[in-house]
Length: 349
Image (cartoon, helix red, strand yellow):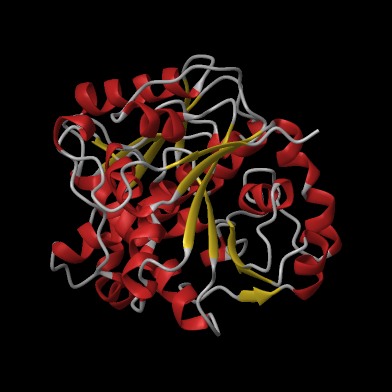
């Protein structure tokens, strides 16, 4: 039985600001600057937008457009546009003639349960920096090895993501590393703002590829970086007409509860199988942007997240329950006669 919870956004248009979001800036919409920098990267290329007619029929909607991020820059997810973009931006700012050593001597540190760590590791290696990635004890060793294969040092810390982030913050403070998180909080805004800006490349590609504006856009969210960046750009491109729906696991309702409270709140709950989305506190920058740009916030159950995967697989769109969460929300409550846009955010694990 489907149990999707839905909340209409009371802050739509004006958005939250000031103390409610720790004075966070609004997300960037400067996609041109991002794409200009990415043109200097030999593995950067647009990902496809799929007109998924079979999926639309199965979902009960008029049209289904799927932005497929599973092969982005060889890293398997949209996250390739985040941390690696921040590192590339900092490398370019040095003015070095040899970009491969532009950041020699610098170490980036982060905590990760998945694709963000890969982006940090890959970006650091390209520009001559080092990467240290903290993982919770519950993260599979197979992923730790993937990080090592990208040149990162892996350190284990604690039983959950919050503990691993504590380790990363401590290392940044004690060892002089640059903390590069994909979230933002009080006193930590600049690098995550730049990281979210990197996701605009995906949003700009999508707008160019779409044959017509969608009526409904479904954006899955963990801390909210992808959703916040994409929503800001889509509003600028398409105005108020599309309905923007933010999708979270019911076990990690960070954004929906913050929207209801009118401020950043910490949430609790059991671990979600949608591991990339299992974030209990939203990014302040993302919350500011989504409180302005999103029309609706929904949560889906673990069962709903899993239910869509066989359907996606039949259409050649294999992914994880995190990657397909937007489509799962459509399946749970399909809007009538809709042209939907969803992001297939990662390859299956």
